Length: 190
Image (cartoon, rainbow, N blue to C red; front, side):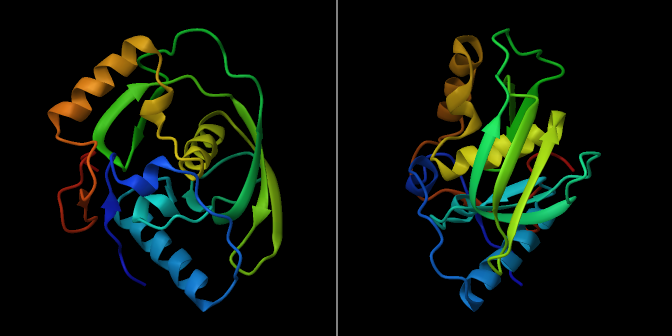
């Protein structure tokens, strides 16, 4: 297993729809193992393949939950269904989200409080489960990566303005930027 660099906002693979996984082989299983290693080294609760520069529809997650769902796993070619996203403004204390591809930053974002996801694992075995609250948020966040969206793309006008200023101040929004979990300082201070 290898820890891979995590690409930062502006890398083209983060901003386009990822391709369906077609082949379930050793190369895919190596990618999944590397993604687990990278997610763990970065102290993340999820990691999508585009975040390590691979434009495929899969993500790993590690989130202990009470939803009768696995605490850790991979979902390949997922289909996501959610409850309605509340129309109210996000709570700046309770609804704060961060992203390994926007390292060290976080902003409030409303998400649906229930999700059902289905897909397959690295061996092609079907899986499906429901998630609530923060676990549902994790699934929505990672699924968005597969459609070329980062959470900062979903922020309301107030928080979106602030995010754009932060992205510009950090020099992000251009290709070629990344950080290396376990080598570079943890941007979220874990």
